[in-house]
Image (cartoon, rainbow over all chains, first blue to last red; front, side, top):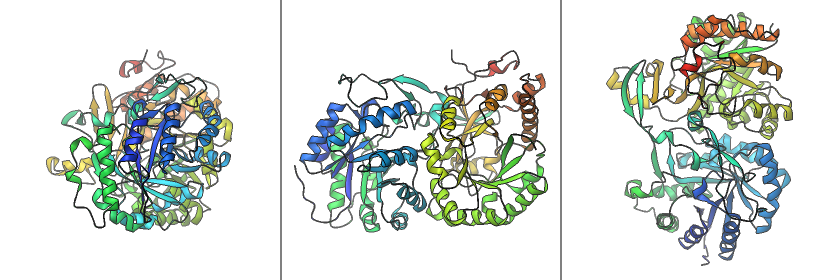
Length: 315
Length: 317
């Protein structure tokens, strides 16, 4: 299971929504895997691990000589945040060093209280310019994630910022509204919803106070519990007159053909979106990027060749 | 000089010249969504300087806003506008993007920064970070309730700016789907987004301005002014960037009168105020997220005073 990397290639960071998905991603060639912990991640209940699953996944990843990244990327309310911060030492004790967060304030607090953590400014932080990445470097981020809409030339410029790891989400859904800048679902419906029961020990560090999350809020509830109103048909009215029926434009970005260009531009991490992907789709997706990164030349595969089922519609 | 500030947004010189601003204390100049917006102040340093001069001549505080989602290639333009704002004596610059905040802080430290609603300010810790970059005023993310905002204010002691009335920004995009209609409608950019376009699905509605999505309903806080003042808020926005000069003037007149009355401890609302607010609300009224509910809900505390407001808005039981 150990895979030795002979050169300093960018890291392939794969998603996993279950312990099994973690093992599948490792087998498919991921250098690192990111997961969410129940109640604290934007992945929604289908893409989150219980504490026991997290511990088992960390053991599996560590024994393979790889890294597990933990997404704690909701924005908890103050009382919940205190609860979360109390549990961070247990996360560190598991051996997890990389944590993904979604708020500049929470990032700086974690940085101050847990200086050994490597903190990633998640894609929801909205970084996509050289100035954004410099900001997150300045406030103590170890890494910042930019969307796959950022091209290799932009990455080259962004990489002029020293002292921060640049991750690019090369496989993702590019929705109409920019990530981290959407309040459409919560405008339609915002409702506290009870977290799913995990069956884990009551003291386990998971779940926002074992209570609620804000269903509908992209930032606080998670995309897994947003209502995806952007994927539903709308009637377009000009004044009082209906003029069209339409969807918001969105597209699947799969930049497998560009991995060499990104690597030359200096990108550090190729990240794949899709914690809710079933394992039978996750494995070939990870393998495809593994092969593209390792290939001596630009792969012939291109975006259009990707099966439709690989589109991470549910993210 | 009033003890509170009522402000709004104006995107271009034409709109500024056509607007009666007597009831506003301050104006933000520029459209944050699109570089192609008709004669956007943020693309025209000369217009911006003239706009700032017009505002100063009227005794208004003059602010400049900035793009909410710039990429690398936009940054030189952003830099130019910050420079123009600084040299022309803008009283502050509004910033929605953390990279732009860093540029402003490093290169134009004399410009006070107001944090805009797209900067995703959710926490007091976030306020503390941004304060270190020269931010002096903060628009909390629109998703926060008044109770949550009060917690932040209690923690940091710094001023918040609240959307008092108008269409609430809900999203920003790189892509303008209105361009798909240029040929079909025979209307070209930048005139397309001047049309009054709504996206509807059942009783949901949102306004599109091309690269920006706004709430279909107008956020309306006229019934809650005493509470806002009592909680220490002094900076209030009427969002009119996509509205007519009539809307800008008439809505401000209502809120100026209502705020003056609320400042003296009188909560009574005039019937003609609600008539004006309703007449300008194409889809209806809502309270945004201020009461911890869905953004499009309306929770009137005095339905008797607001007549038919409840009949035009969906209310959760």
